Image (cartoon, rainbow, N blue to C red; front, top):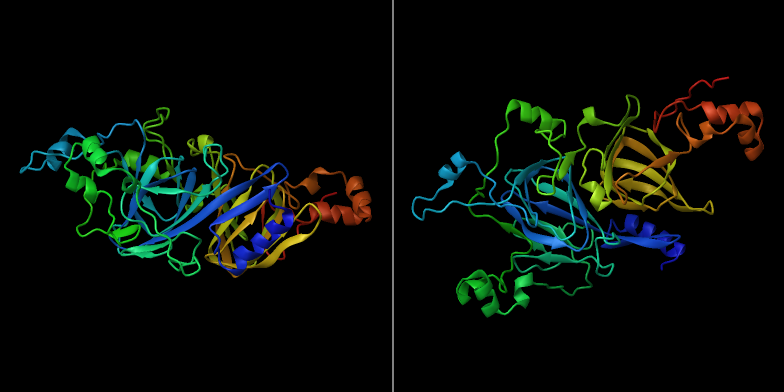
Length: 436
């Protein structure tokens, strides 16, 4: 098990090298959490090849829009209506495609994927589609070791290189730069390890096609160019369904099954904010209440937006580690351990990542441009406990306890307890009147 000093070094490493480490290890009293962080930038008509991972993951759409497909095991591949089936029929071959549901994704969406579920992304827009992925490799769903493993179903993946239609960084967010010490790390898709005769029999195809499935001479990387725009079936929304979709709820009101479970929720919409302060900012959470699949993944996410010079209340994460990716702006973050030592105190900016371990105290303050982030948390019902503000621990203590604990007067204890009357997000320099 890693020691706390190594965790301190890790936090400093992540900020000073802009996330050059692929796996982050978070140490706690009874174990550790390892999380893999990846960022993909997919250009127009770029396809991120199908793959699955050994751990559940959350994907945040940082920029752009596109399509996402997931192959849910055991679920039907007949996502089409009778009318669509006739429209899709190829008059030359009498063939019509069948596949599982394709989901439209856009900036602000959080997509949840169980371990072992293969998925892909496609960018049909002119602007880049930027994805940030966090995989919790210490999750019980991972029965391998704590190393992050990604199993590609196609292509000839080469870690830490650029594809034709986008960028992939297997060791952080360096947008395609290599961190392998000058040695290119090559890996193939899973079909490369099979005998082509076995593949031919399994798929009932000729050996030439089976050989081509291995993509051994494919140098396109993990994001490939689609020559003609992808054609697939997507449903049209009725006005009622569209309003339900925009509110993030199933349109039919029927209890979700595994095959029909919602996989995404948007957390950029200001109207969905859980906490809002017009002078400080807003926070929006996605957890197992509003995205039930997260219950089985034991993960959740939170989007924070601080206005200029605003503060997020000093707090600790009660039941989760928090892996924070900063999406916009600048700010300052401090993290304090159980011994009262500052294990991190520094400036943060867009594109950086920082881990706040379970129970470590954290405070964030935005700079002159404001500060935005998405925090991935290792609990589907992550909770924080605040140190200041209207719903804080300090408010719960009697004045006498505060006065004697800090060796201050009762008047000073009242100011500590009541002078900040806001909840979670504090406006810069504001001071609320204390209550008698």
